Length: 183
Image (cartoon, rainbow, N blue to C red; front, side):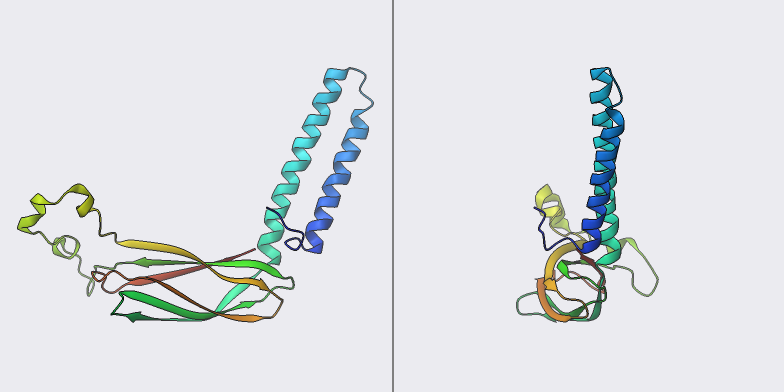
């Protein structure tokens, strides 16, 4: 659901522009005397202006609401098989940000010292024959989680965050990828 706080002044100006464009196109369409053609023109005008308004909202969001990860560090907790991420987010834009989501992707990296062998990907066992298909799929090499790390960030404000996620014991030389998305 869209919120009034979500929009910046630029969002409102874009909506007013597309509303005025729609009204202008409807006024031009009124010169048509055939009713079927008139309603077709009104419908086409609505589609064009609504599509333009939606795309402009996405573009304005991308370029007005900017944040960056100032710092992020992690450490494993072996007792609970978790990894804890602590960091800070800074609003580098000129407008308030409603919500920031951090996507953390952990990739199990089986490559050791540049050599990739079959045994690093699959370690055969005599008991593999008796395992069900569900048991064989239990060990994913990629884990991805999305966390809401901040809400209502004012321009220039820095907020700390802490998130936890499971860390499989079979992961070794894990590669971490962070992606921040704010709107």
